[in-house]
Length: 391
Image 1 (cartoon, one colour):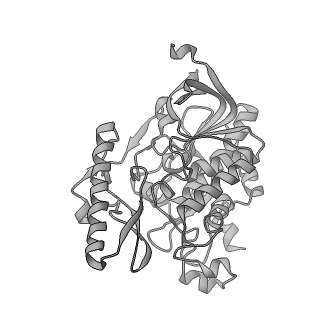
Image 2 (cartoon, helix red, strand yellow):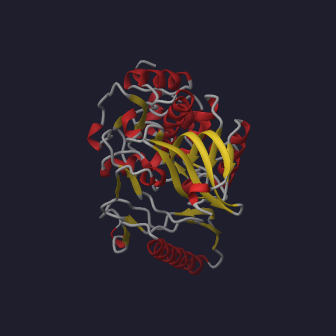
Image 3 (cartoon, one colour):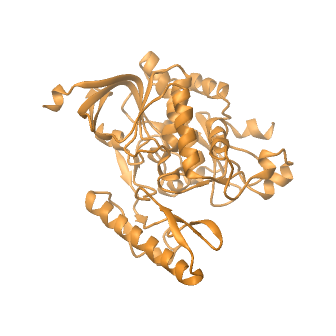
């Protein structure tokens, strides 16, 4: 059957491509605006790198100086991730009414259980009316003029089209943006090999972060194998090296204590930065501390205390009128990309993009800034530095 005559398998107001943290936040935000939402996910579990990828550290919502920057769904999902208990990094001062001085000593971050987080996120989306379509690949798009009208998907039911009034690209690979002809960019330095896994042994359950540095030179032993492209050959080689790293590390632990053994490993390639939007709107590393009238949320620098950023609305979209970017797909400079790709930032950009998409689905044009900001505030998000300093 020609792709021009594909059967329509579903129709929705807002289509969310990708079920990582950005996709969860975008779907939840859009549904709470009254939109009919469908989320397309190629894995069989929500959470993306945070769950299937075992990157189980919910990095800071705060600036490291006692001020919380990211609110709304970013805060909600952190609490959801530890609903049934935490693993490490429990932010006692933040969750149990500590003083600002106590909050400045320990950042608002936590290590969580990936299974609990994925299952509770699924339950939350279901309770809010989001239709989640697992084990489904996005194969292409349908467009009319400067608008996205549908997404071509394939699963065990065959190939079909899902028609939508607006969409959010949370794929991490900018798959929809790229297919719609938006200008995109890849990471010049390339991605380093990583093979995180959990083991149990004499020290109990442990997360092992085997290969984790995204900044060249920060982890020299990993710099020998870096991946800039993500074709089938590169993905297979990345996974092979990742698996061998996991095996070697786990056998070394077994040799050391005689009882250690791996209990789970990543179910996806741990590429951190793959492809992103490269449009006119931009968030830059040098924007630390600079307010912007078009802010749709705030994020921190997870690598060090102090820096704070207001996220401009314009980094969430390109030229396609009803398509938004979130998470690792937003437009940033390369240094900023390493900051904005992490869990709380994905939740912030996902919430903003989800609400904007719901507004676009309802009215047609790009969601106007002032109205979007008002809806974000009503949803519990804070947008400017002055809003946290006066609290």
